[in-house]
Amino acid sequence: MPVAITPIDPVSRPDFAARVNGIDLRQATLPDDIAAIEAGIARFGVLVFPGQDITDDQQLEFSRHFGPLEQATGDLTPPDKRRISMALNDISNLDKDGNVLGRDDKRRLFGLGNMLWHSDSSFKEAPARYSLLSARKLPGEGGNTEFADMRAAYDTLDEKTRREIEGMVAEHSQIHSRGQLGFTDFTEEERAQCVPVRQRLVRRHPASGRRSLFLSAHIGAIEGMPIPEARMLIRDLTEHATQREFVYVHVWQPHDLVMWDNRCTMHRARRYDSAQVRDMRRTTVSDEVSTLVQVA
Ligand code: OGA
Ligand code: MN
Image (tube, rainbow, N blue to C red; front, side):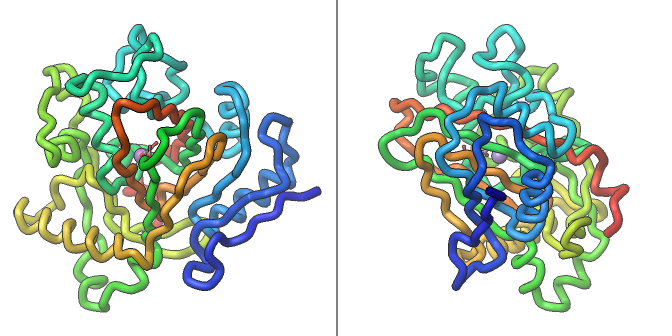
């Protein structure tokens, strides 16, 4: 049986967020299924695969069908402190021994940056293309993930704003996103790794041809613009882009896997009780080149 991809909310969001059935990610996937998933994510931006009780290796194998994977270098955890392989981002509140991180733990506080609207790895020269997040253990309540459609956000901008932002280049750094939460606990070495990276503010999706706003909490400046003016513009655009009508709220079920396209969406985690375990693992397909060398 081929995969079936159906919009989650066909009335209010017919082109954003769909559910994928008829595939078992523990089995080798067929080329036709991969092609269907690629077409599905180009149309819907977010795909939910329910009931996928997979291992890290199965997640890696499935993810590699979509391109080269990023190494998890964005979370400040050195290799000897990691709970899982460098090939997966550890989006959990657990330490190496499986204990819940303390309230003041640096890794936990750094990880709270995921609760700001962002696009994955926009602070890397080649940002993320797809992210695949697998829910292994969930808290009793809270911890939803919200997704915003950056194509709808672009389409609904007024003409004057569209002209104004055309060709703008933004600077992205984790120092900025964490700074918004008052997190400044970077070592000199970490700071050196966080030099701002330039990305286009408006981009075009190569498969759908649709334009979108490339926004992220990591943006701290726009080239050629005074900082306060740039940050105010980014705030305004982010507020516009994250209106509820453009947002799909994912309420996790155990073993859901959610795949999203970072080129045309933003996302954020929501709060949950930090004493409860939330174990999520993310594989990330790299976009391979900077937005600056892609066609606008
Ligand atoms: C991520 C992320 C949100 C969440 O994995 O990139 O931002 O809800 N996760 O954990
Ligand atoms: Mn993220």
